[in-house]
Length: 110
Length: 336
Ligand SMILES: Cc1cc2nc3c(=O)[nH]c(=O)nc-3n(C[C@H](O)[C@H](O)[C@H](O)COP(=O)(O)OP(=O)(O)OC[C@H]3O[C@@H](n4cnc5c(N)ncnc54)[C@H](O)[C@@H]3O)c2cc1C
Ligand code: SF4
Ligand code: SF4
Ligand code: SF4
Image (tube, rainbow over all chains, first blue to last red; front, side, top):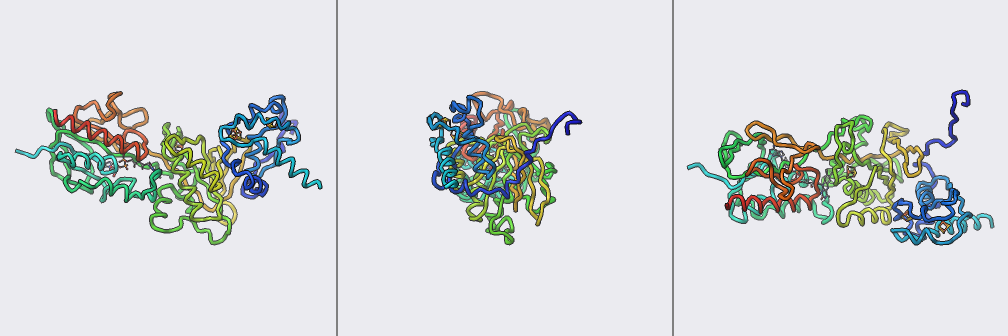
């Protein structure tokens, strides 16, 4: 590809009819308020870890979970400082998303 | 002496009927001229009207309490109004009706979905319009055959023929975000195991309880909302439809494969009405122009009034309020 002066991304289009949404179903059943996210991004804007240049992004994580796509945030980066939840207009316990993801991962390791 | 009416109302949709009913109740002499063979306009076709939950027929019936006092002419289209000093004449089926005032309540035309060829309407039977969905519920039929699956997927496409320069339309049709979510909920109720995805550019949930409808669709009915405009619908495997879009909140192109698509078709301006063979003034979107900033129902012709969706897209609540306002304006006009 180099010879044409550009490189292609490995990320292709996603077939959302065949993705696995079981994790979303599980998490949103336990935390129904997750479903009401407006994708406004206030949580991400308030997050010091996102603002310091990491990929940690609550808004994006909720959509990725909902679509059954790969999660691009590293939940382990979350400091559990709760700033995100303070600004959410829909009252989501936004921090809990990463808390749950860390918990899932720990469970899987055991 | 020839009979002189207080008002001739062109269009027997909810705008025309609300005004006719009020004027008739107040003893005014009113004629309603309706192009179709029945009154009620578009609303008469809707299965459930948001937010009050009445059927379109129930709602229209509420506007007919005093209509036996008015003259209703159906199957008659008006395109020209003649002016004679301080009154007007409207000729219907060869008969001339003299009147002090004319109300234009001609509503809107529906966008013809064939024009957006990339969406496959008229090519794939599983692509239907929002109006066909309402008709299916009215006829107690299921709009999509899902006998070959336990988990059907449906897509609702917003802004079809609205906010689209390719169709020469810049305006937002206003009600179809709400109606699109209403449709998603109804699909969930009729096909309990289905997944519905609404593809939108912006969600315009402006009115009382609209935001709650959206919240409810997300939390109770698990409707999925993808911000992205469908670029193309084509035939996929097993007769399924393939939809392409970008999930713009993620920046990722996505492909969906569904058993049925509902196109939320927009509202277009109604056919032109002429006064002495000259078109009434239009606004930048081609709907009839409100000529006065304070009095919402005036045109540049004294005695010719406008109300309802012929002025631009309106909800039922807005249409009924506008029609009530015009009844007062006409009543005052004929009193003076
Ligand atoms: C799919 C869909 C669902 C909707 N659902 C809702 C909802 O749930 N809640 C809500 O608030 N709103 C809803 N709306 C909006 C609603 O349909 C409008 O608010 C309403 O129809 C406006 O009423 P109207 O009387 O101004 O116009 P119309 O309903 O268009 O009536 C105009 C009448 O005038 C007649 N006419 C036109 N030209 C002439 C002529 N030259 N001579 C004689 N007669 C003529 C027409 O035949 C028609 O009967 C929906 C719209 C759509 C497209
Ligand atoms: S709790 Fe985690 S996600 Fe929320 S603001 Fe703090 S670091 Fe960011
Ligand atoms: S602040 Fe709340 S509503 Fe906004 S994106 Fe974050 S979780 Fe969603
Ligand atoms: S109301 Fe919604 S679907 Fe209808 S034209 Fe406006 S933005 Fe598009």
